[in-house]
Image (cartoon, rainbow, N blue to C red; front, side, top):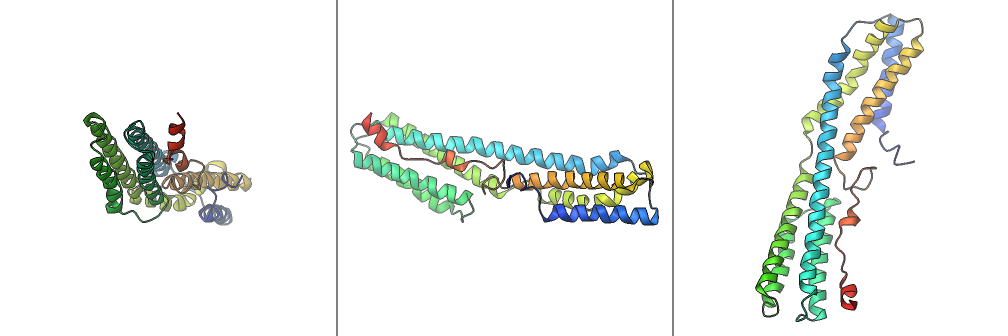
Length: 252
């Protein structure tokens, strides 16, 4: 239940209070005007829908890149693991290096400082291990390993780039400002259309409109960081974390 209430925060309370206050003032001073509702939809609903779609697209792209990351690491590991000329200690050494890459990468996604040089150094350690054992590894397998490591590096850099560059900040700021202005525009219009005989209808409709808009904004805001494991739609990072399955291969 806590996660379902995650979209309700301080901004929600502020918008609801503004809606109640504006409705009360309109009722006391008998203030109303006729404003085209289509203008309101274009002004706030369209930008909100655009940013939410952009956030979901970013999330889908990250999932695709994380899938490439995990599958490429597994492919590199298997290229070494099926080689009967390599000892188990060498295979475990490779697995530990790949696991270190995964830990560093997912640490950066969870908020730790990302250092591209450290990631590059970790990947270079696998290259160095490959070069040191070229007598035991065929050229075709070596080429495959290099290609998979390239995919690992590319998926890391692309994912971190997507994390660092979200949806347009100015557009999100505009949406938030207009949501706070929205009660001053929609509630007098509701009074004009519905009259003042039963103000509780205007109270209810004003609060409902404000609550819906700020909730949509909060959904989009939660999607901006799908790595913090707080929102309902966050990416399950552990599903993409590389795990050393060397013992299982040894038994096989």
